[in-house]
Length: 490
Ligand SMILES: Nc1ncnc2c1ncn2[C@@H]1O[C@H](COP(=O)(O)OP(=O)(O)OP(=O)(O)O)[C@@H](O)[C@H]1O
Ligand SMILES: [Mg+2]
Image (tube, rainbow, N blue to C red; front, side, top):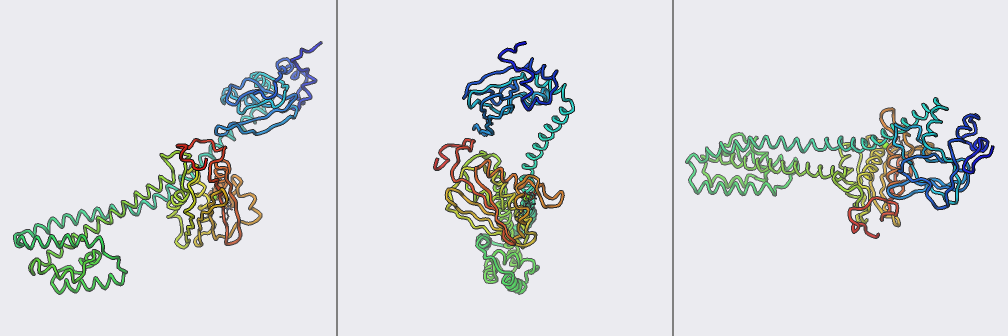
């Protein structure tokens, strides 16, 4: 019996490693359903993303497999090994995953293939190897789930530090503003009350005018009041208390700290009596104290709210919400924003040293992702040092790279684990404390996304993680910058 030119005999099929263990019946079936096809060198055998209709086994020639990475074709392998296969390899998952080609196969030279329609390939696998099918399915979905978890963890890592650090940092100024606003309400009510007393008709227009002038002056002094040391403040308060008591103003101990904080001293107070007369001195001083108090409270609220808005600014810078993912950034802004997030997590006896080279130009980067890198490196450094040490964040330039170093004075990385620290899930932290993904994620962001490098040097008391980032975008950084003009040196 002769075999048509586009068919293989069962014996020929048996020489392909994929099919070598099949029985005669199975080989007959394959021989009947598959056919031989030729492709000219330089042509596409199948394209990534197209509907996956065939399973290909290489019989002769050289092929190259390529995958699209951010708009670029990247060759993942090239081979002339007879029997290698590609194409609809996931046909057995028909109905469970979208049936498209996962990569592109090109014929580098003229090539021959044994081609099996996807549905035949799926049928053969399912009916001949039911147990292997279950295993494969398990493996496939297991991998996909764990990848999803890893992706989720990447986001959580950044988010966790962000929210923990930020809520802590926001809490203080927000609480201060709320407290100051409440006290301010009381003071304003007190002032209304005092005004009624002062304006009871006992003060003539001229005295009232002088009092208002003094009030303006008091308010202005608050703005320029020097910050006294606790000792100097105590002395000044004593002097003011003495003056108030001498002039029979009650509650001197209560008024003095406010007056001193507002920059008012006994000499200044001495100007009040001539203005309003002895009978109204106490009321006038109290009124002026309220003025100082409201000014101080307003400043406190202003400072607290400014702090809140700065923190929100840092959080926005950190998360890069509402910013383009790929843009030209000053890494110092990113480092500072990340350090703000860490402020609450840096122990009192860990000193933070920033050595920034501000001459460095902005660089094209995935800013939010770089913040994840800093987060992971700083988190590791702090974790290594524990309660005390020095955390140094340094920037510099090395040829056409910008260098960011995160250094700590912790115990260092033992030589025997050094080769493994960038592996996913490698951790020396207790179960539940670390995922071992920090450095893996950082490596992928720096090396794969930015075409940079990440290196480590470690000795007891001196560990440095060094991140190198290209100063200009390399050809394989696929994303488009916000505007081409933003990319210097391209
Ligand atoms: N600065 C450092 N000093 C000493 N050892 C370090 C330092 N940075 C990393 N390591 C070692 O490398 C390991 C892997 O770090 P990686 O950041 O990948 O994971 P992790 O910190 O253990 O976990 P996670 O980042 O999820 O909290 C750490 O467990 C630690 O043993
Ligand atoms: Mg870590």
